[in-house]
Image (cartoon, rainbow over all chains, first blue to last red):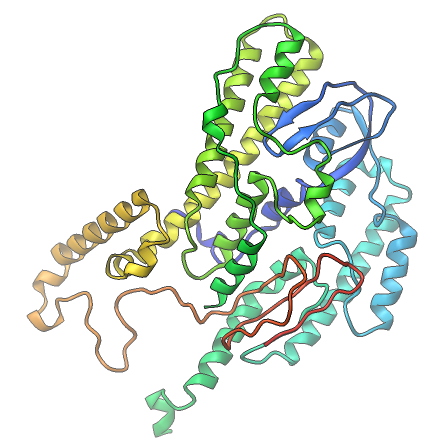
Length: 189
Length: 250
């Protein structure tokens, strides 16, 4: 088939990563490069030691060749994440984070953990955040009904994670509400 | 329709793609550095300060961002969304131009070490874009094959397909019909040998898109409260002002 079964219900995390890698990020280049026109836009020129803003995927590419340092986005540090975690655990709603924070954080932590301060702490904070938020979306299942669900501040990876299950549940609830007695076996029972 | 509304939201911020092919003169094979820069720059592009485009009033300005959005929409919508023929043509043109430029520079022995990195990056991007294009086309293909019989009988859905897609749908429907007839249906009693019976209490035999399936909706710009038909899961996010995020469902 044109689309493998595993891809039908939702997109996969690597695909979300691909989308997120289009975001711009600041780097300190270690090589110089003329301004180059890409399909997504023109980036550069790179002139060490001046900072430059380029898409994350280029940054990752250069970083793997040890040709740049990635500057962590303003939300990827211990203080900010600690503050969000406190908010997350003390309040019932989701705290606001960049929409694609999970993907970007993973990519940066994977290739450029040496450019971050205290990457281990960041990793564990991200994990705690994820768990706190996951617990909340599970909580949200209780309020799930056939027609609506409010999920402010949920991020792309989290939506993707709950999508198949939530949508299927809502579909079934919808059917139940729409035709409560259309099933003949139920009528006879 | 839930995804119609989503599509309208998306359309409201739409950017008209530049008519690419007219400008696509073949890159000149001049092997010095300046010419290299020209080869890569000889295409209509977003300005270098793309940051503005990313989170400003045009949430998906460049053709690639538009296609990415359409790809994601297509993957999650239960129905087939309108075809993006012009956008796709422009991007494919652009892909071809970039590949040609890369080929030219690679064949040139005087390209410097620094140029190699640029070539490699441009090539990487070409592959990334190709992946998105392929996945987008395959997603549509999957839906077209799945709903082929429905497409041949429904004029409305046909308006959302390109000519090639309509053609594929009708051929696919014909071939499967023939196959079913030859392998099973011809040996069944006349009463049961049709593929479009609608007996009571049995789901219809023609697979239709399940347009009552809920979808997640993400508002790209601030919008007033929208009233949608029931059974829609609305996830409304005001990107303009990240501190006053609100979500509302109907």
